[in-house]
Length: 395
Image (cartoon, rainbow, N blue to C red; front, side, top):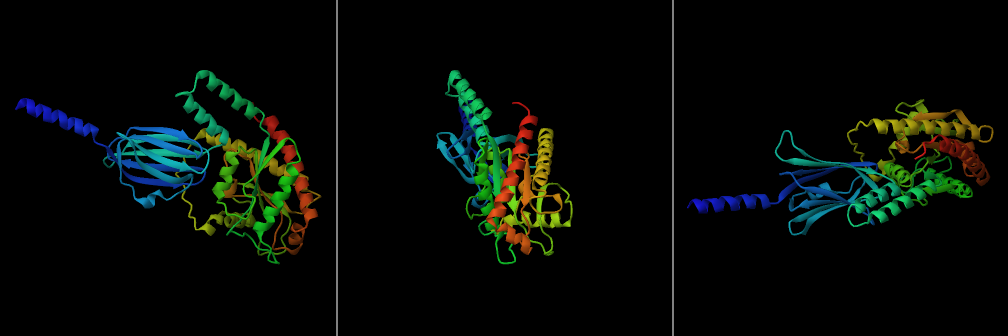
């Protein structure tokens, strides 16, 4: 009898140990730059993250797990384009997050709940560059089936590629698709004007052998503000230029303007413009959901250095345009533009002029004027590239 009870007790312990954990709920928050995933478990899970490419995926290897997610919570958001889960073999399960581009797993913690039973897994995913993702993937593989010699060779190749990287410019044609932007006095749409000029500027920049140029869009499509910034980070842009041609009630206001980011607007016109531009995502019915701000002194320092470069470029743009292109009074202005918020990419928003002004609208549609504007911007970019290269630390 005692032996039987002992066997029953032993078997019950074994069964308890073998019982799968339950993943109860799934939540996501954030945008294309930073997304947080939170999964609630009834017991502490064993988790091992694995990176995959083509397409970009973050796979969570779990011990056998029962999933009880509400399907509505799996709706794509931020960096996550799809969520899948299920058994992956005997005693193993997987939670698979497909991502819209290269990413970095910034944090992954399993924490015991303070005021409720169970545990929560918190995963912070941050948009990164193609090179950074390749480095992370190589580091992961070097720990598994890649020889030390091959790993060292791959690292050297990546370092050589980074050293040979050209000065990279991301051109952002404002608005697009269902978001037409401002409308001119003759019905001209801002989305068409910005795309035409972005193409002109790209074609001119591509004549410079030391520059590499990308565009956030090269056709009439809608892009979220965060996606525009994410693309700049993916390509490790050295400079981000967002191109616009706004409209204001005061039709007498005209001239080009250069904007940099600030939590306080320089004036009422800048504040109103930033508010309009930041509502761009609403055209697609998107309600932004912010993550709690994470204090990081290194990130703060990066932002300050990046912001300093943004100010220097804005100054060079104004000086290059003076005497050649009509400028608004106090042409360097600032406001809280969401599209300028990359922490590691110097960014400006260039307002070519105002479609609400007849003279500006006429100039903006003139190919010769656009060519002149592009030429003066190239001069500013060349000066800035020289400055940034000389001031940037050697890796």
